[in-house]
Length: 437
Image 1 (cartoon, one colour):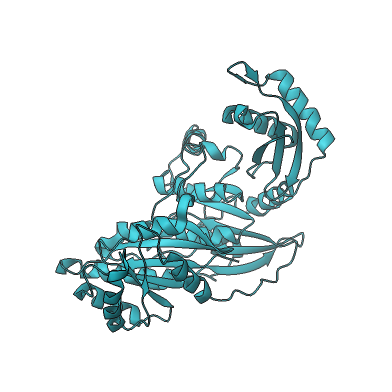
Image 2 (image 1 turned 135 degrees about the vertical axis):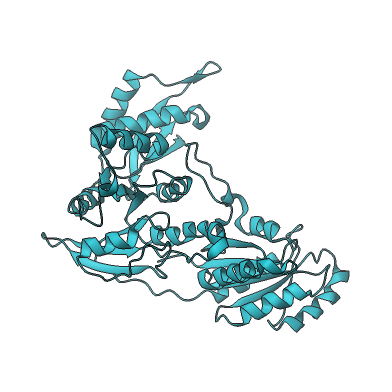
């Protein structure tokens, strides 16, 4: 089940960024101290009264410069297509503008719920001016103040109420769900077709051909069921190519949510791009199993060191994915594609592994004997015991005398010792430190 999406649209200077930050709160900031895991501010997660959702900011839509009309329309179409609910943000200070009317006409054509919010209503005297916005045709406007946080609760109540109902998915317990994620045109749809041996997904060398995520189920020779989720791309339109690239992250996230294991697809011809790191970072943060696939490997001119050098580049640029296996494949020649199901099964198995506390603490004692716990201002970290509290991903809680004494480097050391003892290839491990009560 994927989280619904709220898109915030409106002209420049109506306070979209302020509302965006208010809605997502602290969650827009990344807290992991790992190089390469980054967020694009166009996308973030939000939560209201127990409902989780994604928020996207479509940027300012302005009609004052005629040559950019295509960009305006593209922005609105992205909001219409990606969103389950659209917040149309205006400003009480300027009243209803020509740009507001233009955006309203674009939004009329969508069947998505549109909530009209009038921002910068910072005092009661301005409420009377809100009635002018009825003329935009979206019913009763929501008077809000982004700077003071007024009225946002009513707006979010209405947004959550407008979310589409999502029926519970009935899935076989032993079905392994996996997805291909990556930048447009790395060959995701081609990999789907190559693995299935038939043309079930439209393939094109035009980036972003796929419009919707397509689920396909198949079995291997041993009867293991797989559900393959193809990540939908985004259409590119002339000069707005770069503008739409960032929205591929949202598409990838929605596929990641439904997956047990994520195949991060790289293009061997183009090498590692910054967007590859962003998308892979989301899968890592989500705690999913990860495989790195280097597609189009057949197109490179290779010598004895090509394989090793490319692998070293991946390990350097994706240091936080040191646990992820790497497979060099070709959708065109089907090179090494037969290895993927076996790797997926192995990762799915280790993601479900449970380690008994007694065995785990034997490893912990050996680790502390090898590398004594750190000290700070004369106080030494004392580790009392460790226990596994969850699977998918494996999650371990370490009980200590003082949480502040657990430096992230020592926590990483403990994680490495756990991996050395029990494997866990292809899955992140979550380490939690708690003070013993």
